[in-house]
Image (cartoon, rainbow, N blue to C red):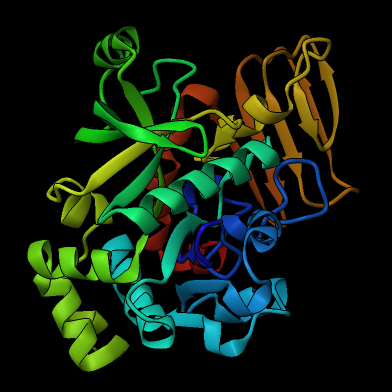
Length: 354
């Protein structure tokens, strides 16, 4: 690295589409979903720590609901490096507050990287090489760098980044000006994006100098950065709820993208388990004791090893057993789990299930 990197893990999300395994006090980032013994958050910390000066340089921003869980997950994290949001206000507020705090400690030229706590990455060496390139670009230029994942299929579940003119090469990786950010497209549009070769998936990972980002936030999102700098996190309930994409990245002229390939998934819903763990020789993905007859293309998960799931004649379904809840859903409709949770929230009988 050309400069010291301060990684910040964004750990405030709920991961509702992994319900019932994901609950209010046990969100997705606390789960072991890839067949290893490490949770998604622990795996994120594991791959970031070698790229900086150890635990003293790693930061986490999370919500008051799950802060105790974060401490249990990452006991080595210094308490001063754990920022606790009193209320979730999306990623713009989180990035603004963390950037201000790191600037206070290390100055305007501190290189900060933001990384969601719930991503899966296959090639750690390629990931490290990419971050070195992004840090080099950010250190040498007034740049807000985002990592764009080269698409492997026409996804309608991800946002996209269109690359413009090439800006240069950093650590032997090309960097481009960002032409535009695009929200989740329909299938036809996604296929068109892939055909052009100019579009990447928006990974939600950002690298920049603290002073550069703060200046740009003052220019494009003063309603977020100004109150936080003046009042600190106590002002959170009064802040607008905005993503950093909408508040900053779609407006700034300093956005750059590194199109990268290191094996990536944002583990958005239960179908991600199939992308990670499906074997061609097996008809289903089984993270449970499953006895099936004529059952194919399905995903099974049980938290209790004593539970047995028995199926007959099923195809393309997800079955999840956790404590006193069983979820059965067609794979193509897992995005609708959030709607079911809204229904449960409106009925006091189901409060303990959330």
